[in-house]
Image (cartoon, rainbow, N blue to C red; front, side, top):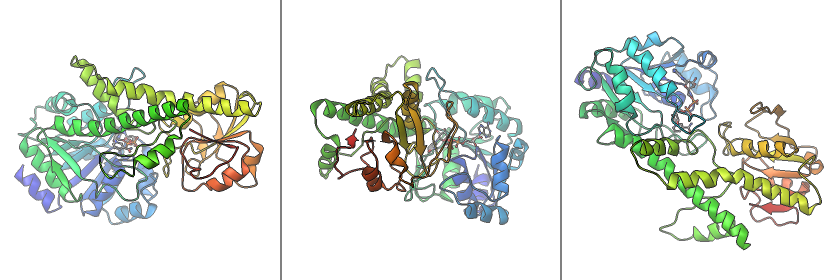
Length: 432
Ligand SMILES: NC(=O)c1ccc[n+]([C@@H]2O[C@H](COP(=O)([O-])OP(=O)(O)OC[C@H]3O[C@@H](n4cnc5c(N)ncnc54)[C@H](O)[C@@H]3O)[C@@H](O)[C@H]2O)c1
């Protein structure tokens, strides 16, 4: 193992990333910037082609960053897993979705690990970064790799390090978000720490892969539960005739013991709506019935219906039914500043409105076309007083690019689920 650590410290190790998405591509660039020869492997040939041509498909990564790494010969992308043979380190950054039953779907991890197994050799370091339930590294990845005849901790290193990247966040990225690392043995931890120390400001070693896996799930469950709590407070405030946004703004003046979370149309993205269910699945498999996770999931999943209820009531006051009304959605990405619509609550709200007969349109500067779930819509530019012609505008994502004052001025009716119209009053404005 010391030979590997020395190669890493001299930056002579050849690094590999499997899965070049929101997590894998920024990490590959960080390795390349640190001077490592980096190979990205993805099953999606179009991503591989785009990297080769110096073109980005991730909001936080510019074309120039990719082109610079590729031209310097420090980043290559391929669909050929045989490249693993020449690598010293391999980070797995593939998706970990849920099945429809809310059970973990480890297909992508298993596929990636089976490919690594084919080419695994002594002295390599394998790190799983995909979010998953505690025990995955030791119960799924380790046995699959050891079926090669090589042993983790003796012949090769194996570790887990959760990815904590926050796409669209201008302040925190791969380099300055502290990296938690746990290996299957202390030597494995040491090798993984040595790798991340080359390109991440702070590395936080923990005692095992299980602890590292659980850290990520605690973080995301914390968010899901707190968002669930504030969504319930929003529903309660609605019933009591209280403005929940004013309550939160005042509560967050407390300098300690309170952290502001905000209500909204539901959870979105690849992490918060999904990861806690990895944990609850594993807990249930071990005879423990988790309560917070299920309850928060239940409340958060009910929010799109609440938004539709708000739209229905608001239109009702104008003597209109949802059926036949022209409803324009502002923002379909799951959060501001990103083009990611995975699990976006906007899609749930739009589906419910469509089922009730609404005539839908939308604007989102990051999502030019919507072809999910049977939608065939193109984002509309917000000029020419378009909003004046629709019956209701529903704000679902507060992208900075929207001129919300103009929206409030022009639209006949606005249902604002994100407090984007903070400080504005009017008969045409309804808040969550
Ligand atoms: N997106 C985030 O904000 C974020 C943040 C923290 C953690 N994570 C976790 O990181 C992991 C990756 O998420 P992501 O958002 O980068 O996903 P993504 O869908 O953006 O990228 C995953 C990539 O893996 C590729 N892939 C799938 N199976 C493969 C295989 N067998 N071999 C090679 N490539 C394969 C896909 O083609 C895709 O390009 C997930 O576990 C996710 O939960 C994501």
